[in-house]
Image 1 (cartoon, rainbow, N blue to C red):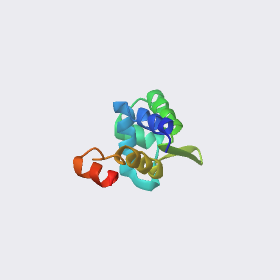
Image 2 (cartoon, helix red, strand yellow):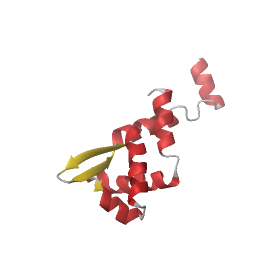
Image 3 (cartoon, helix red, strand yellow):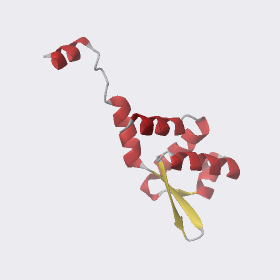
Image 4 (cartoon, rainbow, N blue to C red):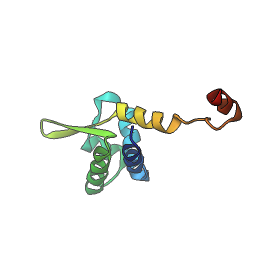
Length: 104
């Protein structure tokens, strides 16, 4: 994952409301939720919710698909796993026992 892609993904989650929307979609699993369902669960006003969803989809952490007259929103678990891997990949790399193993 490139630094720019990671930064965009983390920036999308950098708002309390967007993080709330994303957690709501993660809890819903791969089935996803309609905009109305998200609004019911979060209490976020429709126009504000649309803005947050646009930001999350632009960063690739949420996918949207038209289903009839509704828009289905789903957490992009693959992208979220890549972001988690990106941020955790350097875990503990500077600890003395890891430095010795890497230098050796």
